[in-house]
Length: 447
Ligand code: GDP
Ligand code: IMO
Ligand code: MG
Image 1 (cartoon, rainbow, N blue to C red):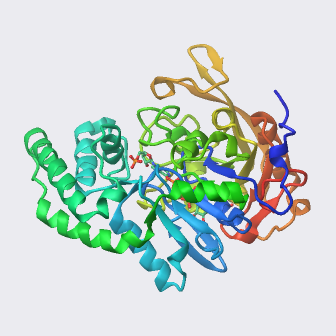
Image 2: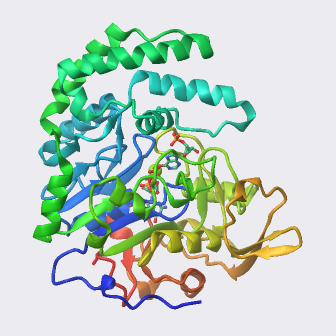
Image 3: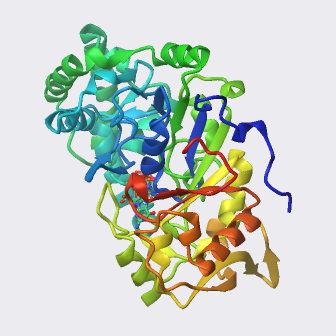
């Protein structure tokens, strides 16, 4: 295995933050929100580049906890310009609720900007999301039900409504009436469901448009300016690598591109302006919704992890499926995202286990696979091959230095790093900013 890339991308240029993509390295909920908040202390801009309010990003700062679905996790830092960029699908009611919650907690949303290119989630998207899931029956994906898939379908079908249209009353009315007339045919004739009341939707969304209009602009221009000024941009991924529409565990994926490449697509920035890609991983694996999960633990160890890690969805409250660390997933994430470093979190959750396991291969049909296959979803009978390491009994939540990390825990971190071939830049032992510990010698921009 190749060693870590000794590349310029680890180096902070002076006090300036490199333009860094923060990407989920597993199936989402890796703690991207926490890491983005930490990086935002040094950045000039945080850009959310994809997904919608299927995401739930938790930030715990100064004893307070915030849950963001659309607003970038940099918003707690008043000097950071926060962008909801082109690749995001926006449910206006959810965004307005988040803005008003922030205001009621004494935070100023003035440094929030919303892309005029972003697509709008409308009521028929949510309705179709539920109808399609019901129709899939036993093969249901377990979507968040927020209308994300149908909104991206409309975007690809070139019938989506974008933010610049929402805030133009004449254009919005025309577009909405056209689209709803088609959707109502689909709803009533194919799904035998009730039609949408276009007048009610029009009135509701015109009100949202008035409130959102001051935030809407061409955000790619702002990103370009930040690139030229060198103010340091953090690109906040939503979901995770294995939920990517092309490279994830299809069809049990989301409908966007959470991977690092999605940051360019969803922001309007060229790949040459990206300096670093930081993969966020848990020290075990979780997944919400249906689909393959080779290292899933359906036993008391899985329950132990779920309860200690409070592994219940930020968006839907569903219990997250829990399992051992899967090095094949992280290796795949390192490859397709071009990871320059990793953060490894939730180490505190594993305390108290006699041994901890890392999956290093998949046994299938008499062979051991060492790479995620394209049809992983369909490999029935696949068995993980584990390496078993000694656990640690010490609680970690109050640990603040690398020296205080128990030897077995450090051995685990080092083994993950070795298997993945990417340096671990920081570890995390709890939700708060202070519970992030930098590893010596790897600069992730977190220091
Ligand atoms: P995201 O979607 O990737 O931003 O992650 P979520 O916010 O959905 O889920 C991560 C959860 O883990 C949140 O509740 C965080 O507060 C919490 N968290 C973050 N880092 C740690 C950690 O190191 N240990 C523990 N126990 N919890 C953490
Ligand atoms: P964050 O950003 C975890 C999952 C859903 C479902 C699949 C498709 O918080 O990490 P969708 O509603 O997107 O069509 O659902 O994707 N999913 C997530 N799982 N974290 C997320 O976001 C997710 N966003 C979508 O559970 O399995
Ligand atoms: Mg989440």
